[in-house]
Picture 1 (tube, rainbow, N blue to C red):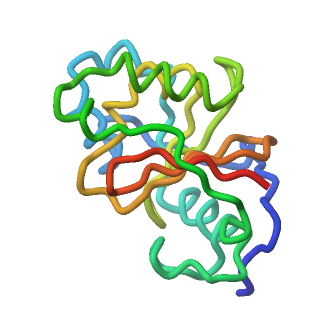
Picture 2: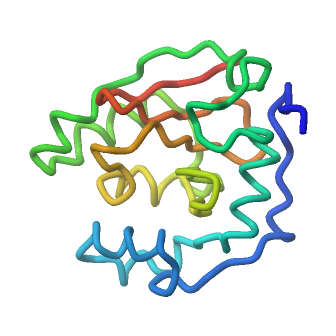
Length: 169
């Protein structure tokens, strides 16, 4: 499969979801947040099949983020640092990062976003939930998950070296 050269359009109504606690990825989120019950209605874990479809539509046949082709649309974005997360992650201090992200991305609280961790790990949430709970989503050993808004151009990438990157066209 040829990697997409433009940001895809996503059809959320075609996706299938798993129960939060019953999926592997949802289980990780539960383990990362003591207040996950308050987030239950704001986080929808895609089934492995739906996550795989989103991955393929977004990144082509790559089997990991490291294997994303140079011709993929994400490779043509201009990536700029928009804040550091690692120092605040280590202190479990979410407020400075929340402020950095809100200043860098002019997205509404309700903006639907896909948090794409890997070929089989993806959730659907909204920008406000992600920003307020970024510590739940970010792990120090991740290899650069993407936060892709539905029907918007900018993209957020969580760099494994402790920065947030904004990808713009």
